[in-house]
Length: 638
Image (cartoon, rainbow, N blue to C red):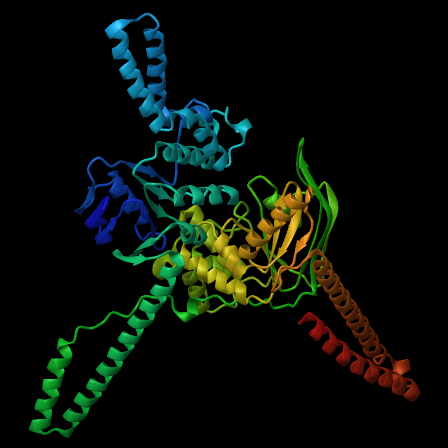
């Protein structure tokens, strides 16, 4: 055991945040602290590192062990460069290197015992220098910088001029390079792109010290941790395994608790009915028996009802208008800002019912594509075509349309006056606004809370094509799961940008990877994307192919060779073309049917019996043809 928390308690005013929290961390153990927003996770980390005093209990750190802590927000004011700032984490090695160089100079003018003494010291220092990886410390610094997403041209930037997210990455890099015995990280993935998160996963998994993480990134937790410390209503419970193991065990416990509560409630009702029946007999013996049963009932230790999200809090998304089969078609799309070209000649299509994840590293242009699709910024070139009856709903953290003076309840009720009070409250509750929270002013909410309100409004819209930019940012795990369930049941179409790999893996049906100014498509989940990307990289390296960008990875039971992939893509294109032709024929027949109905209202037509019979016969044929085309279209769409 390297760290122990024993009966930790903490309150702010009358609100008790942590109640008798006890758990311990073993050497080299990787642990996650999970819980909803406001559960006290960051507070617990601050108590462990000594930034906050506990109201009760104690934190015990093994003698000689060191702690390293990364808070969510960093405000570095250093005038050093990024490289110099991280190099400072190796100050002990730098000082040792300076001492070794100084000894080399001193030994040049010595001889005899004095030289022997200096040689002994030089030997000891050199050995220690080698043990501390002194000969590779510069490579280690550069490796951490590149792993955290800093390009070589960024190394000379002054730290004080960086954004908040960049400062957090610098602080994380310094912390990793100091190699403490226990690393405590509060939301370390918030400002990292996917490649940097993958690098950090590998680094922490192989780290020879203990790691304690507060994070909502479930994919990240699954890859690293072997123990979960759950904080729920001030109570702490420990689960062995990664996040998926915890989730399964939690569901089993929830079911068992609910079952026990229901059984007790059933028994209580039964006893109350027996007591009432005994009293109704109005006999001395029956009344005594009733009183005896009442005393026994009073002694029962009542179980609390499990505080889980109720069924009515789960969102159901259903567009009122069904779009055409072709939702979006983008051809030859290009965008540059000055000399920086983000992407060029992009082509992609999105069909009704697809949930497409647009992924890529920071700065590749993912959000720019979403803004172009929504007309917020112009493209340099290219064509964007929306399908028939497509209505877009857009979620952008930078352009939230909220009224600061309204309450949460007013914001929803004014936007959707047909909703009942129960529906409004259940929707807000699904995004963790319960009780009197619904009467808070929008202007008094945090940025994350406003994002959740904007997302709630979007979920209630009549849109059939949702375009979402980082929808899970600022959501805790419960809210993410609610959103995932809602999107998976959604019959419309979704295009989103996200760095949350668990969210992508759970919700997407197709991935578009924006890399090196081009798009590569992958059918399937994020796990399949990783597998296929590795396979394509291996194929590229063994065949000498310079680029496979623009190809589409098609999943199957086996690994498809190139010929099979071409055949599969050809089959898909034929099916899509057949679907387009069927839809065009339906529109043509429906238009002619409308024309006939219009003609039948004209006096010169409805007074002409022969013309009426002719048009009526044509309409009957159209109805028969429409029935056939509808069946064909449904079969193709299915």
